[in-house]
Image (cartoon, rainbow over all chains, first blue to last red; front, side):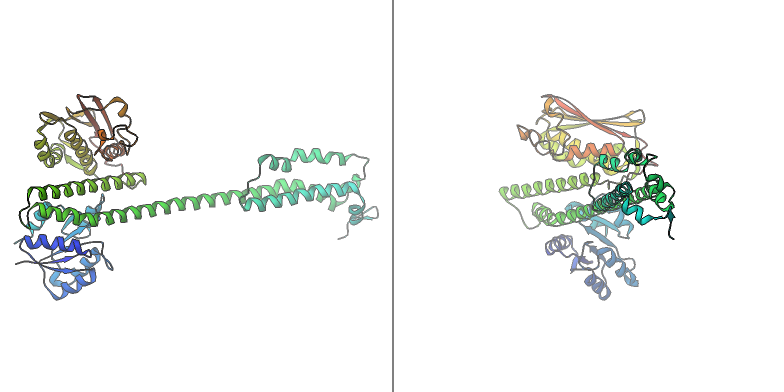
Length: 120
Length: 361
């Protein structure tokens, strides 16, 4: 089974994303901020990361950068799931190195469709 | 140096000659007045123009001084005293040297003020921009769980819902999505307002873009028994445009057309054709139409305010105002025609080859 790291500071949104991933048959672990995510990704191997951008401390962009410095995580797919959803934000985050961009509020069918792609 | 003339010292002349005293008084008053005005203007006190002109008018000065220059007066004395002559010349020096100097300072001060004002405006723009970005983020975060969890319920992930529960969940979902649309539109309008809406032009396959906007509306249209028809000009396939603007205009107009169509047998027609170097896209419905006196209000940001029967526009939100502004920003036009009771046609023009060089900041 694939293991997903969910990085999200809002507990309700964490619950929502976790529920959806579990329903899709993933195992999930949660990090509440960027630093915690970096620490967890160092210790554990994940198959996919769902990353919020607006986080306390280092933001999702920085956290992703730091996670990818570790050779094991160099090519780990990271999906940006963010409430930064104004015009131009999608392009900005894809350029920053995320593999996919999903805006909040989550469009559940769209989320499922994107997640499906990373299922082996 | 002790300038002397006919055995009399300057001091003596100054002290004992009333004419000279008067002249000195005038010169001194002018100097004092000017100094005062400079000080006052420094504190942003604006003095009336007539006062300025009166005090510093050279012609007026000569007129004022003329009674003292009669040949028989003791003033002739002065002409030969270099110091007093210089003193008499001082108003001239004042106008030639001092005044332009003061003006230059004033000009520099004004430029400085303008620079500060510009910086202030720039700063205000930045603050507003940051505020909008944060606002958007803060509003979307709670909406995420409102929409997300009700969607999970609706998809019966936690078990079957009874009819009433399902109805309620759908209500939450609909309102959540309406709120989301209002927030997005509001932020877009504000971004246009502060000039931050940047257009990114790319080649778009128009029939595809139209299909993409129809698909999510199909369910709603079927429920209302409204038919959506397409009449697309095969000559118009690709346009170079901003995807967001095109999509926003299409979605808004199409959504309204379906929404205000008569239930049972309404027809919404999308027409796209080439019009010179513009793409002309029309969306007509066979719906309730728009009263003539409502036409003007249609594209304002809050059309239902001040309206006698607010329900006529309910739900159009900011969409029309935004679509119009976006299309105009894109170098196009958007307008409406309607026959009350028979239906409306909304049309917009977009340049087919927009802005391969233009970038609006």
